Image 1 (cartoon, chains in turn brown, yellow):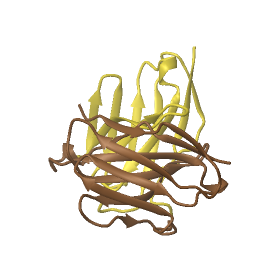
Image 2 (cartoon, rainbow over the protein chains, first blue to last red):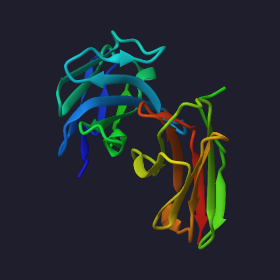
Image 3 (tube, helix red, strand yellow):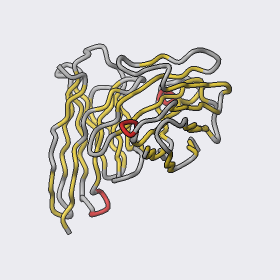
Image 4 (spheres, each protein chain N blue to C red):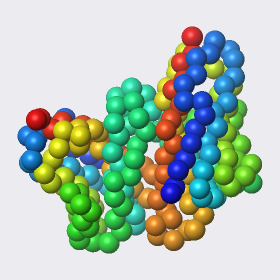
Length: 119
Length: 107
C-alpha cells in the first residue's frame, strides 16, 4: 500500500514554456501533499504544502506565481512551473500523507520524482 | 542553526560491519522522526519512523531517539552493498530534511 505516482517522470522543455507535473496517491486518500525540489547532490527542499480544497502554503523564497499548485481532490495534486527557465531544472518530488491521521498516518510517502530539464 | 543536521559523511564501511548515522535537531518540541534512504537518481523511501525515546528495531535497522539530547540515530547492522545510498533524517510532519549522509558499503 501507500503508493504515490508522479507524471511525467522526465520532461524537457524550452525556456518560457509551462510544465505541469501530476502527483497521485493510488491506494489512499491524502489530505496533504508536499512538493519538494532537489538539486544534484543536495538535500530535498520543501517548496510548498498542499491541502485538499484550499490554497497551498509556500515556503519562504518560493514564488507562488511561478510554481502553481492545485490540490483538487484527495488523490491528486498538480505543480505547474510557469515560464520555466534553465535555473528551474531540477528533480521535483511530491509526497502524500495518509488521511487516517494517526501516528502512523503522519508518515509521508514519496512519489518517484520528475526530472525537469529546461533548455 | 539548521533545523536538522546530519554527519555529512561520506561514510564507508566494509560489508558485514555496522554503519552508524547521526542526526541532531533544533526544535525541542519535535515529536516525530523519520529515516529515509535515497538511491542516486531516485526519490526517498521510508526506512523507519520513531516517536518514543529509546530504540526501535526493524530487521537490520535500529533507530535510536534521545529527546533530551535532541538526537536521533540509525544503525545498519550486517551492512550489505545494497545499503549503499544516501540516508536522510527528517523531523516532524512537514518534513525538514538533513543534508543526508552518503554510505558506501565495500564488498
